[in-house]
Image (cartoon, rainbow, N blue to C red):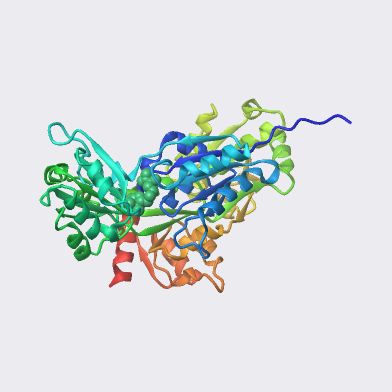
Length: 507
Ligand code: SAH
């Protein structure tokens, strides 16, 4: 018997998630997430980053808020074990800030090395520098500070350590906000001027960022009065004064608005939610994208659609982006390409449908003036007796058929793909429960979301913001009780409605 050589997929990416702002993940980190089978993420890693790995299994291994306390040794073992499972998997280990600045990333890498698992380190933006930066405090500055040190306020090494650091201009203290009193006292005892400016930045780079300032002598008191707690970075040094002129992030118009720091769930029933997510993020929201449907192959594997294509009706009607994607997937599986459509005219509904065709080198022959079945039925340039083939899902509504038949056009329909309900995974569901508001862009989003209601989760009493009066009616019909309606059909108006919903919920 010959021994088959197997190459295991086992691989671990230790990724620095950055300090909180999801825009501060590196491109390499994003790439590693996109290729992960399993993601093990931390308390300090912003869960919004999980949007880069929608298909991966995600496991929360933060030491904070973990139902049972999990030790570092257990986390190390879990990383190794997960990488070895199922014949080898790609594991993304997402850690707050930088991998090797505290947070024990070095030990996790050692565990991989010992187990013989290949790994990579993807450095991240550390909170030690980024939290001060978002507070308008540079850690070095010409003629003010030429050196900085990052230290932990947790290990009580105290005096001796601080004396060694006496020549360092800027001190950055991570962890141990609770020990600020004694740390400050020891720094003063070690020779630092009690009047040295100091600032503490909590949840830096996020829309929950809060800053307290004072001097080495007063900072502990200022932090107590402001009620700041972990996670926080304390900066000690003359550079703190620069905040007076360089303050930017917590001065921006969107900062501190009603959505600032709130979780807004964006339900998606099709592609295209990300534009709304961007608008909401710009207002400081933590966006949770919740896909409520998924697309599957037609029940006959597309045979009916292919047959109908070959029979060659004069016009092909594509009424969604997904129809285009599914059509080309089907052609590909059948060993065909765009030339199989050469004998047909094509009508596309909606700009993104036409765009998706164009991306595949096919120009739509007709796009109705306004998206919607009604407009296509009225405007399609066909004479009575001519034929149109609608490639769609099992959910196609009759409006298009009725409209075309009323004009004497021969309408046929073939099932190209299926639309099935999708339930969010447990992590997402947990975050969804805590969302401040849920946006609904269509009636079907409202119905799909209502269908998720069970003993553990009741979305019907949560505040929702609806895209327009029709969606709002559909939401009320589906049982939602707290519906705020956007005043116009735009993403900004929907974001405004989400803000009003949050304000009303608080008031
Ligand atoms: N590897 C991380 C540090 C982990 S130790 C990094 O490079 O940032 C955890 C400490 O990091 C916290 O106690 C706090 O001091 C700091 N920290 C992490 N994220 C922070 C944030 N967004 N704002 C302020 N401090 C933060």
